[in-house]
Amino acid sequence: MNPIIYLNSFMHETTSLLKLFFYANSKLEQRIKSLNYVYYSHQYKCYFMRHRDEYKHQLAHDLNGFATISTKHITKNPVGQSDSSKETPTVSIVIVNDKGYLKLPKIYSKNWVDFLHESGCIFEPKRRFWIITQYAKKKDAIKFYFKDQGCRLKIQIKTDQRIMMHHQRRHYKNDEEIQSFIKIMTLQGASQRTIANYASQIKKIKDYYDGKAMKEITDDEIVDYLFFIREELSYSHSSQNIVVSAVKRFILALTEREFNTFHIPRPIHKKALPKVLDKEEITALLKLNLYIKHKCMLYLMYSTGIRCGELISLKVEDLNFERKVIVINNGKGNKSRIVSLPNKLKDLLVNYLRKVRPNIYLFEGQKGGPYSTTSVQKVVKKAVLKAGIDKRVTPHMLRHSFATHLHDSGIDIRNIQTLLGHSSTKTTEIYTKISKRDISQLKSPLDDLDV
Image 1 (cartoon, rainbow, N blue to C red):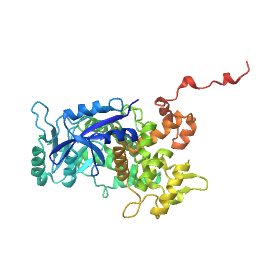
Image 2 (image 1 turned 90 degrees about the vertical axis):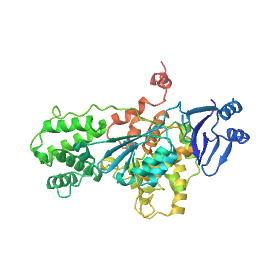
Image 3 (image 1 turned 45 degrees about the vertical axis):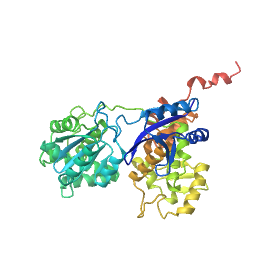
Image 4 (image 1 turned 30 degrees about the horizontal axis):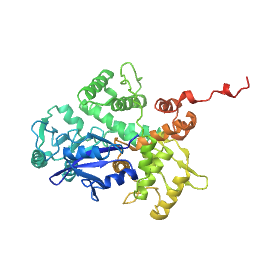
């Protein structure tokens, strides 16, 4: 099978160019270097050529038999090229109070992202929009910029008071009812993340009913609120489930009434199959020449199946090089477990500890303390881009890949369950649905009998 070269359009100043992304392949790279219309950029760390049809046809001709050319990521109407027959990119902005919620089109320029960052906008990854604080002050500059970039602006002003109230940050320090709820959850051993999440959801429900005490809000009123966040706010199934879980925990902890699952239903959970990287993609990722701290993170997540939150909580003392194990303390659900320390990872970590010398946490931020989950996500995103992997990859996908590849190699599902820290094999069994293990090749015990 020929390697794939992905062509991706981008702008350098006023010039439209095409990046060439491909997995590490020395023969293919030598072939590309011989082409007099393809250049290497040290700034962008990639090969590129001018965005012209004749060069695309020439590239396909010159690499025939060496590689397959993919053009699916080429921008249909690159900024800087006028073509009235093609659709103008639309930038959508929803204004709520003094905040704007901006959504870029599916195909956009990296320069647009840089502009939004420089303007102080905040990206919300779950819903994939940009939050523009103090919109009134920034609106003229944002409108001028995107119009100058050839974009069409679609601006909508939300006047629904309930929606505006819902998007505001919730403060519950002076709410005695919620503080009592926080105390109960703390005594129950809930994580800080769960406590903050559930308290925030209860506060939103109370504010929706003008500060009414949670104990006085009926099941029917809760159902009306769930309908509101589903239909008006487009909450996902998992987000709706968090609200229901918060309500259930509050009712059982602080009221004398029962939680009725028929009156307050949960949305039907649509369990999607986990997305994984194949072994070739993992190899390309781990072979990258990266800063040693970032390389260790990638190796750890794939070779142990550790969660992102567990990774940043790892301490130097959790590594046992003599026994070749890593102790993961206070994982999901406050559970601890032990995972193996592979030789390749061991050598890399020893080298890292000698060079970086972290104090307490294995991966520490610039100001000390543990690394943030956002920083880990950025490390993965940049590495994936550098490896030329044509997928949206998250840190958790490395955990899914670890489990799937273990099952591919014949490891028992119960052992995988232990390594991942799952309470039930039912959770782990989802990897059997995406494993490439061929059932027909498994040996039956009958074949070992002399009959």
